[in-house]
Length: 351
Image (cartoon, rainbow, N blue to C red; front, top):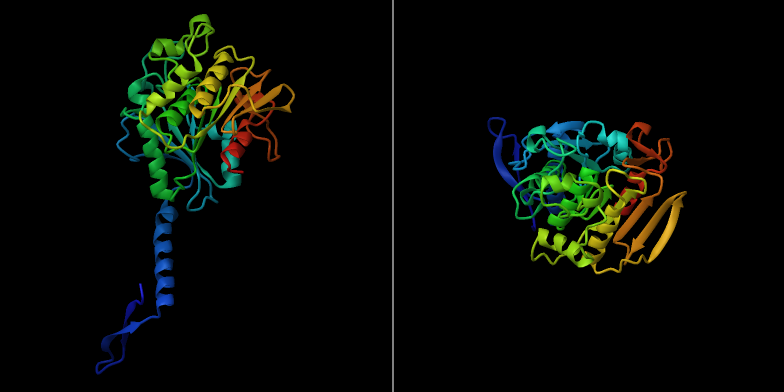
């Protein structure tokens, strides 16, 4: 653009004179065009809701999920997005507060998307009869499927449209069944998510039926000791979620309690085997550390896979209530030892 022509109106025979063009210098024209583009881009964000709210009409929603979002007052255009999944029987309401994620959204200016399952989407069988995300159904867990995973991506797309969210900084995390859903999104949409944190979840593709998904103990395929999958087979599950994909993969942080009696800590081993194989890393960590008493952090390869094992934690969220930057969550939400979301957000590069 070399110049911009602006109409000018002034006095004439009847108090008006004919409109004549005024040509602005090229530099000023470019500056004005840039300002107008920035102002127009900011209009949708200025009109969009802030705080915790439900979003309807975000897409075709083939998985029939509800969408909730938390947008802090200080969120800027281009803010990152963290998708946060509840566990079986859970809900979006207070999930971000109880686990501590809202604190870091407020502190570091990212937005939260919280999918919520509907009771009617899951059958009545199994030990947890309702509100689990369907991590076992190919329609819901693969790139080719037209179900829950696609609905979640539509939620992310809504945040991009409405808040001009940064498409290069989209992350995902979840607890228990929401941890399994986290692995679904990382496997099926590696081009959407940059990183994920799985809290006491299960490996991608560990179960193909609802019955197997809920089977625990000796014969449970997702955390039982009789599962004989090799690392190659675990990795093939992920590669099969989006056949032919050759682009970069999201990095993964895996958390589990050493005293978890619902989903055995073997699940951490299966997930480690899965993701180290996907990245071509050795299962032997390149480094280990003890961030806290009874906590072992292991780093694999170039750091794109981490595991965190908390010896005394059961099937509960790692929280550490308090006012410091490394404190988060509430005692009613989990195990009072350290704040998982703080370390996950740092792993994402948000803090």
